[in-house]
Amino acid sequence: MLAIVAKPRGFCAGVERAIRAVELALEHYGPPVYVRKEIVHNVHVVERLRGCGAVFVDELDDVPAGAVAILSAHGSPPEVYAEAGRRQLRLIDATCPLVRKVHVEVRRYIQRGYRIILIGHAGHDEVAGTMGQAPEAVVLVERPADAARLQLAPAEKGIILTQTTLSQDDAREIMTALLARFPHLELPPSDDICYATQNRQNAVKSISGRIDLLLVVGSQNSSNSRRLTEVARSRGVQAHLVDGPDNIEPAWLTGVQRVGVTSGASAPEDVVQAVLAYLRRNGVASIEEVPAPDEGIVFALPQVSA
Figure: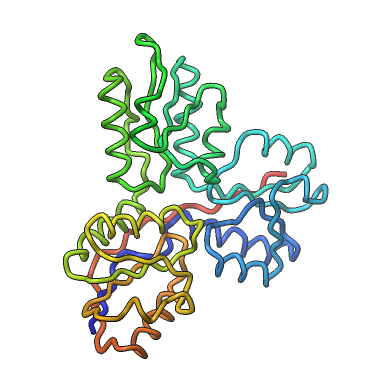
């Protein structure tokens, strides 16, 4: 059996930035440092940081007044910042700059009288943060059927924005359905789906014709990781999302000659290597890593606001 390892894979610049923000806060201030929501959607990352003294909370009202608090990479609605001010927290905003770009777009277009049509997944932390920028003017569309039910006056200005971690193919299908009904809807100057999401999906597409099975390393609540399995399945490839080697069912490998391996943008590389070690012990004789240039994206670390 041959394992084909996709690249790029794993941590994106936004995830690197968010994790490093927690690590540096722990080094500088000492534990505990409080984090609203999971800093990124990966169980291994969260558990490692918890072991170092990070305390993960659902909301800032669980944080003692004056403490150090960090906002997750997925973005937060305005009331969270207001609560941090009321509690006099030393706030570190680890929102991914690409998510913040979408927030800025929402506010800018709202000021110009637009309705925001947001393509995304209900309940995801990023979508909650984006819709929270202007809840009265943002409508969520999750699938093409939602476009058929959307009510929009013919003269009402509107713009289509997207969650940053969507499947490119799914987003395009929904966008096509929206524009078929409302051809006057506008698109943002640049794509909202982030570079890392696009690159990892393209990497899966590039190997999908060569593999019988794809293992995606990532957590179940990671949107971009789930999308990687969907990209493979849409091309007829069996695909499974696993947090690590313990989640691999031996039966998945039965009859498989070529297994692909990749990881979501919040999955650590050491877990990928643990999956490859499992595959070596279970029939993989050789490993081929698909070459790809480094993405070369680095985001500046966030500052502390008192």
